[in-house]
Amino acid sequence: MVTPLLADGRLDVSGLGRLVNHIIEGGVHGLFLLGTTGEAPDLSYEIRRELVKRVCTKIRMRKDDRRRMPILVGITDTVFAESVRMAEHAAHEGASAVVAAPPYYFAAGQPELLDYYWSLADHLPLPLFLYNMPSQVKVTIDVKTVMELSKHPNIIGLKDSSGNIGYFNACLHAFRDRSDFSVLMGPEEAMGEAVLMGADGGVCGGANMFPRLYADLYEAAVSKDVDRVRALQMRVMQVSSLIYGVGHHNSSFVKGVKCALSLMGICSDALAAPREPFNAEDRALIRRRLVELGVIDCKEKV
Image: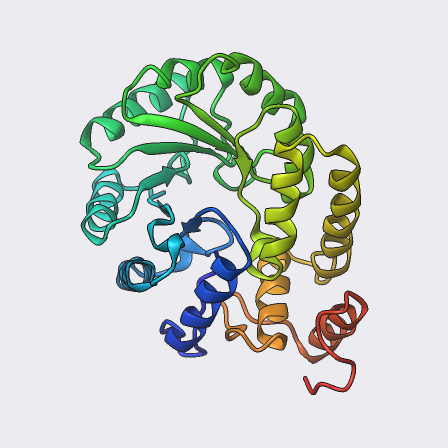
């Protein structure tokens, strides 16, 4: 989930409420807060805690059958104690599990990662998902390291955002007989195929905009309905090429999602500093592409 922000850096509370409703009503099976799409490393701890509290409270207050929807909270940090503090806050607010990528800046070796995650899991009040995100943290959690860490009773799964299909398939093979350990696909373009091959699901940033699309794709893959998977995959690739292809920077994916959500009337397109929203030209391009996708009317104003 993105983190809706105002131009002054505060949480966009109204937008957050609309976004959570939009995502849940689209049929998703869980929420992941404070991940990459959520801009977690760029947010103050105050904003992170407020986001977790507001979302958990909103889920508890919903009157439908989805009120027990699992909430995963990112606790990635360069400081061990801060990861533990965020996990404690998440547990207090009623989250279901936490997610941690390796500490960034100084890249750790595999023995260091093993010791780090083992100790972290020992100190956490919630179950832990490993988060493999080498493009942002400069190190891969090797398959052998994941296998060793899976022996810890508090480490329950892996989210892989490496985009390396060989690595992902090696993980699927390693845990083919482990129903107690979940393997989740990060890049949404590969989620349908991954679930067909035995993955437990995907974490799709595009579900901020089009939750029903990704929920339907997941359910079609679980049902082994290959024809429907193929048709929905075409739509996913349309979204990817039209929305994520705008912009020229590493953060363009998040900018595209937030710009689209703004044009759809859901939340602000503000980003955490130092990143800035798309300029007028790129915003107009996103608008034209949402019209092409049939999401907004061509007569709507920017």
